[in-house]
Image 1: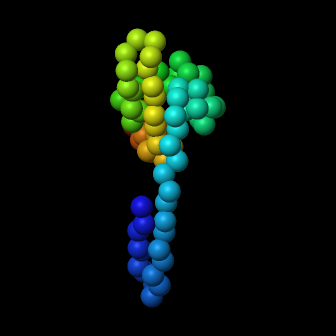
Image 2: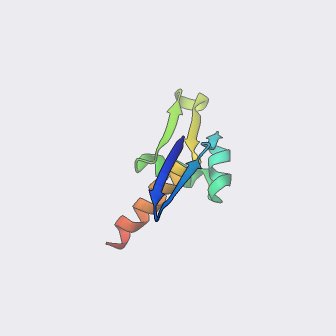
Length: 79
Protein backbone atom coordinates (compact mmCIF):
# COMPACT_ATOMS: atom_id res chain seq x y z
CA UNK A 1 0.00 0.00 0.00
CA UNK A 2 1.29 3.46 -0.82
CA UNK A 3 -0.08 6.73 0.48
CA UNK A 4 0.81 10.28 -0.43
CA UNK A 5 0.74 12.94 2.25
CA UNK A 6 0.77 16.68 1.53
CA UNK A 7 1.36 19.51 3.91
CA UNK A 8 3.68 22.40 4.73
CA UNK A 9 4.66 22.69 1.08
CA UNK A 10 5.97 19.11 0.93
CA UNK A 11 4.73 15.88 -0.59
CA UNK A 12 5.87 12.65 1.04
CA UNK A 13 5.11 9.15 -0.25
CA UNK A 14 4.83 6.46 2.39
CA UNK A 15 4.92 2.79 1.45
CA UNK A 16 3.89 -0.07 3.69
CA UNK A 17 4.46 -3.75 3.05
CA UNK A 18 2.12 -5.85 5.21
CA UNK A 19 3.74 -8.29 7.59
CA UNK A 20 1.72 -11.50 7.68
CA UNK A 21 1.99 -13.81 10.65
CA UNK A 22 1.24 -17.47 9.94
CA UNK A 23 0.35 -19.73 12.85
CA UNK A 24 -0.74 -19.28 16.42
CA UNK A 25 2.85 -19.52 17.65
CA UNK A 26 4.10 -16.83 15.26
CA UNK A 27 1.32 -14.47 16.30
CA UNK A 28 2.02 -15.10 19.99
CA UNK A 29 5.78 -14.65 19.52
CA UNK A 30 5.34 -11.36 17.64
CA UNK A 31 3.45 -9.89 20.60
CA UNK A 32 5.35 -11.79 23.30
CA UNK A 33 2.22 -13.40 24.68
CA UNK A 34 1.02 -16.98 25.05
CA UNK A 35 -0.99 -18.79 22.37
CA UNK A 36 -3.83 -18.93 24.90
CA UNK A 37 -3.85 -15.12 25.06
CA UNK A 38 -4.11 -14.95 21.25
CA UNK A 39 -7.09 -17.33 21.40
CA UNK A 40 -8.77 -14.99 23.92
CA UNK A 41 -8.13 -12.05 21.58
CA UNK A 42 -9.79 -13.99 18.76
CA UNK A 43 -12.84 -14.60 20.99
CA UNK A 44 -12.91 -10.82 21.63
CA UNK A 45 -12.93 -10.04 17.90
CA UNK A 46 -9.25 -9.64 17.01
CA UNK A 47 -8.56 -9.46 13.26
CA UNK A 48 -7.16 -12.98 12.97
CA UNK A 49 -8.26 -15.34 10.21
CA UNK A 50 -8.99 -18.86 11.46
CA UNK A 51 -9.29 -21.55 8.80
CA UNK A 52 -10.25 -25.15 9.46
CA UNK A 53 -11.82 -26.85 12.42
CA UNK A 54 -10.71 -28.85 15.42
CA UNK A 55 -7.04 -29.75 15.53
CA UNK A 56 -6.37 -28.61 11.97
CA UNK A 57 -6.93 -24.88 12.46
CA UNK A 58 -4.69 -22.38 10.71
CA UNK A 59 -4.26 -18.85 12.04
CA UNK A 60 -3.18 -15.81 10.01
CA UNK A 61 -2.90 -12.19 11.08
CA UNK A 62 -1.45 -8.96 9.72
CA UNK A 63 0.89 -7.41 12.26
CA UNK A 64 -0.17 -3.74 11.97
CA UNK A 65 -3.89 -4.55 11.90
CA UNK A 66 -3.62 -6.68 15.02
CA UNK A 67 -1.54 -4.03 16.80
CA UNK A 68 -4.09 -1.36 15.89
CA UNK A 69 -6.85 -3.59 17.30
CA UNK A 70 -4.89 -4.00 20.54
CA UNK A 71 -4.45 -0.22 20.87
CA UNK A 72 -8.16 0.32 20.22
CA UNK A 73 -9.12 -2.31 22.82
CA UNK A 74 -6.73 -0.79 25.36
CA UNK A 75 -8.20 2.69 24.83
CA UNK A 76 -11.74 1.33 25.21
CA UNK A 77 -10.83 -0.23 28.56
CA UNK A 78 -9.48 3.11 29.82
CA UNK A 79 -12.75 4.95 29.09
